[in-house]
Length: 582
Picture (cartoon, helix red, strand yellow):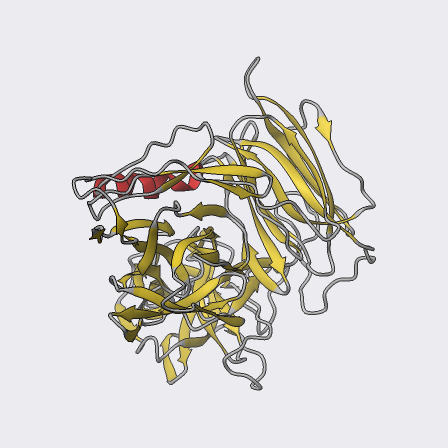
């Protein structure tokens, strides 16, 4: 007789930020609408429930360069599997689904998005997908599925159906699925490398363990480079696990952490004009942190050199130092140049991706090189002159993050402040501070003393979550002003004020007064308007964070501002800039 097995859940795969959602379980899936660009912005599913069409809500943000529809030949065609990749999409390391592929009993649809990051896949079985769940914010940040065994003749006394591992080719590797599907709903399906030791887990507790560990256990090489791209390396040790960021248009920035070797590396790529952050490869910590910022697209990374060796006597090899060569000059070396050196041809083209091995350190590194003619370096006209904080090598563009509405912003390291720049404005006393970049600002506390601004504290919004900054300044204030913005409808667009000596005989320069401009009006001035006037840019945009210097007073203040240029398309950002001075 026909037996309808109990449903099970697989996944979710991806990040843990965003809002949880659950479409529930239906009879079948009719079609899926996917909005995507360099990540999966959103999905929306049309389900079938006993012959009735039921649309889910849109899961994700409003962005997406392209929209595709997967329309199944219902009821004869049904989904049997989903797979894809996920990786970090911002400087805080939040994960999102970068690419996704759907497979039915007839064909494969996709991949949609950009195949980069950690690979995931659900085990194939004699089941069909009857619903999705996951997390979403500005992007589709995680996804899982409900599956239903397909009705068939079977022994009614059977309680558990076990399926042998399925081998699925991915690039030049074979990945082996592990998992079991029984009568319980809370079944977890994992993905592991062949001959690795990732056990099958069942139950909610297992789901949490598997979800947290899946990143390292499923890191896989992306498909081999095509279109004339050449692969070099990797050079270094053979420990850790393999990684491959994939192939992009170019490289904007590289972040490094190092101690006795390169601890970790994270790269901001350019993909057809979009800033895309790769995953962080390596371990944690490090004694020194470096940011190598390229004046992209004028400055192009042409080749990478370095050294490798053991951390301890007879120990495994790791990358000891790295040097980055561009058409402008040399960045580095970063780390200790000890041990055998490595390089690749210098006249082949530009580096468009990294691969290698990672563990507690960066074990090895290799590059993808796109053959092309490299033009002589010409500084980008929209950038200011900058100086690297460690090597003195020029670098004036730092791609930061991507907010969920498709707005890209960058920051460089200004050598001198400009009248309408981002500051900080004020004195050189105290210690530097930087709140970073957020989605927006909810409220600000300004405390003023008799002669100057005493302190500043800000409540930010980060993906719908409230984040308070530290109090920047001292406790000598005589009055505190609370500026509450009607966020998200009201945004901070500009700050102005005055700075000067604390008193007539004091050489300490501090912020004397502050005024805040929003999309709805002006707050302030707070404090005494004497000294040197300053103002941030008045172009259309919004302030996403503050930075400056502080001691017992607010010594200096500056902004991270996202600028909109042009009104031809208010929903699309053509180019934005956010500058910061150290």
